[in-house]
Amino acid sequence: MGDTNTDVRVDHGACTTVVDVLARIGDKWTVMVIGTLSQGALRYNEIQRRVEGISQRMLTLTLKGLEQDGLVSRTMYPTIPPRVDYELTELGHSLIVPLRVLFDWASEHRGEIVAARNAFEHRAVERAAVHAAIFAPK
Figure 1 (cartoon, rainbow, N blue to C red):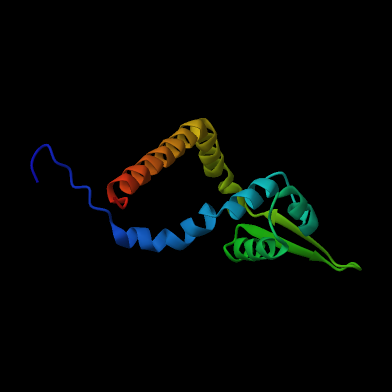
Figure 2: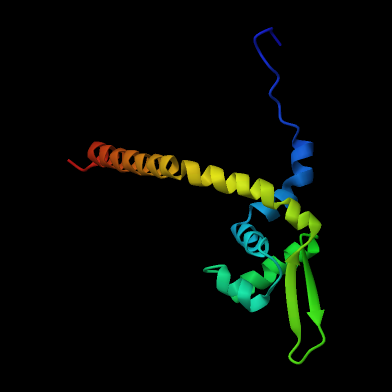
C-alpha cells in the first residue's frame, strides 16, 4: 500500500466471535429490560408493566436469554404463590454505561435521523414518479 493509503480490512474472525453477544445487547427488548432492572430487582409483572409494548412471551424469552448470558439473575422464593425476582448481575451492571452512551447518542441525533428518513422517502417518491412518467403507456 502507498503512503497515503491505510489498510482498512475488517477482521471477520473477530466479528464472528462476538456477533451473538452483539445480537443480544443490540436487541431492543434487552436494552429496555436492562434499563428497567438498572433501578433494582423487580418481579416479572413489574418488569412487564414498565417495559411498554413487550409481550409476555417476549419478556420470558428476553429474561431467559439474559439469565443464560449471565446478565440477569433469577431468584425464586419458596412462598405461595412462588415469588421470583430478577436483577442485574455485576456483568449486567457493567452494560449500563455503554447502553447509556448509545441512548444519549440516539437522543442527540434522533432529529437528524428522522430528517434523513424523510428525505430518503421523498427521493423514493420522486424516483417512482419519474419511473412512472418514463414507462407510462403512450
